[in-house]
Length: 250
Image 1 (cartoon, rainbow, N blue to C red):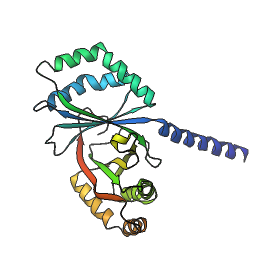
Image 2 (spheres, helix red, strand yellow; image 1 turned 135 degrees about the vertical axis):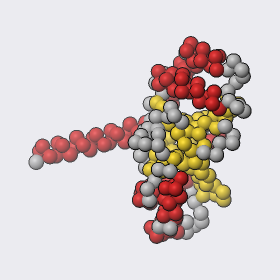
Image 3 (cartoon, one colour; image 1 turned 30 degrees about the vertical axis):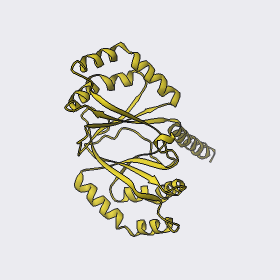
Image 4 (cartoon, one colour; image 1 turned 120 degrees about the vertical axis):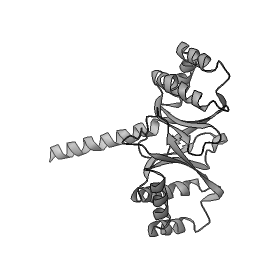
């Protein structure tokens, strides 16, 4: 009996430690807009230099994606760090690295590769799975951004925690990661962003059709919106993406 109690306590502490590690990690979503005809050059620089240098300086490469409909030459990627302070130190070291300076100079001999670089600092929600690179074959990723009705982000998170994520899994979606921005300029206190993964476009369509028509979802949505919608009008945005060839998440 004592052995079983000790084992149970050890397992409990192990799982608690994992949750604590997850909550302490700091995430960053970066969105780059490449100059006209320069997206391939930007991807090559990441493939040949940047990703390795990020790892060298303590950044965790989670995933790199480009939109399926990429008319704006975008590159999305997610990095993880032990803390915000670690993030700042890593970027400082990266920017000063002679190998990065040489790679940047060589790649921009005919002009800058990036016209705009957006950075969004993110904290994982308490119901997010452990965010890690997704392997096991190629996937179609979906990046979704929700803007909550004023004062209702907590309600929106409750619905995801208690119903939505489980129903996503039920209908074949892979819950990849859920976050809220940490800074007001990026929607802190009013936005939820997340990635889910699908096998392919047909699977995505089938999953969403099944989810929307699920009686449990219809019931949960109605119960959560007795005082009005949880998201603003046009407050849900979706971008379908595919991983780059150098992305840890496939």
